[in-house]
Image (cartoon, rainbow, N blue to C red; front, side):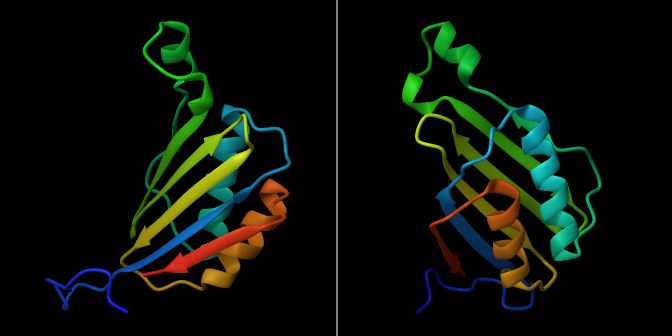
Length: 126
């Protein structure tokens, strides 16, 4: 099944979505460590530090919603990047790995399961 037409077949892309429920205590430092560890598990090289945002301050200012509390994060990779989203209330995460270099999705799943204490997870490559 093709999600969208491939407009640039000459450009290699691998994308992987991992979602699940985490059981560890997350803070900004733990999110940074997760992204760097995931890049290492995939054999990818970061070219910058992880960027981590928390919409919690927007909630305090009345611009956000409490059910969206958590972290939004991105790690730039030499071969593209990893975006990650963590909802602290339901302890739900959603991670998108987007690269121009092939990787083993099982390595990402295994690392994520261990690092986040994830039980049930779903995943899709595209």
